[in-house]
Image 1: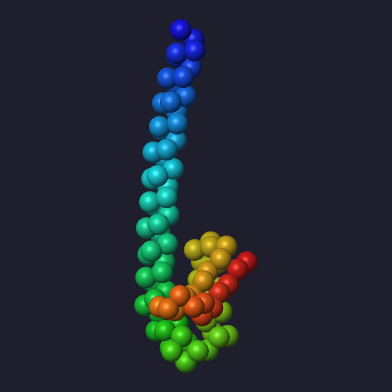
Image 2: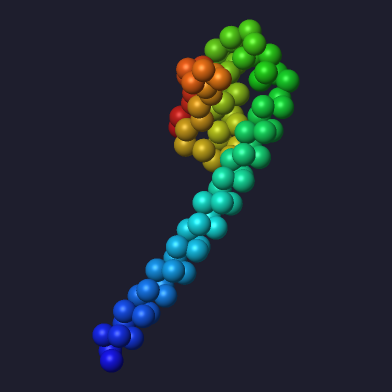
Length: 88
């Protein structure tokens, strides 16, 4: 009986943990999407990308990454090539 109760409790706890983890992943995804949308709308950042101003791109990525508490911020082109990045 104890074995059955323990297995049922473990199964229940794993299900709860899975639900919490899924919610946290979804929340994180929404926050990152919102942060990327704000950054993409920044006129100065867009101009820096258009002119390939690497110093400005790096600075903006670093500042924006600090604001959203990101350890790494990367910018890639539509072709997948890395255009810039920042890490703490």
